Image 1 (cartoon, rainbow, N blue to C red):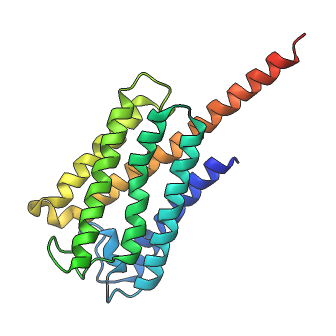
Image 2: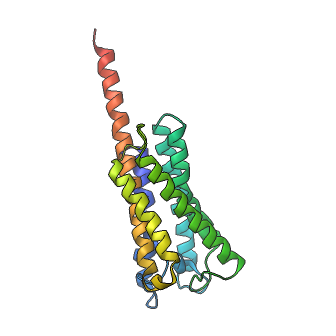
Length: 210
């Protein structure tokens, strides 16, 4: 498996450890109601381990985006992947600026930073994917419909998470948005690498002909 594919898979596995593993270890935690980052809040049973996993997942996410951008040519790909990579940077920030207990809309300065970076990253990623889905260039390699759906779901989940009337399902909405983004990332990593391999084989075949 190529490096870009390995990075995408590793990123997804590490990012989903907190909600799947640590969420099950905390009896008071409700996956449908609570944000993923609440697992790393002060007082959470496995806060230190969760925040460490956030840091690793964030760095892997950014590395995956950079690896995908290098597989493309042109500044448009770099711009799109830079916007998408902000999700990874939000994981890094969350590791050092965990949310307050309950992850409220208003709280400590750390909570304000946490919310601001998280909201900006989801919005930027959604915009990047939606713009990429309508471009006529070779960026992205993932199907345009999947890119558009991922961007749309990320945007809808962001709006839903901020709506007071959706508080009972804000955790589920976040997981939906995360699932859309990570699904796109993995598909894009495999698609762009496959395209590069096809080009390489074609070039080698042409070069071997008399």
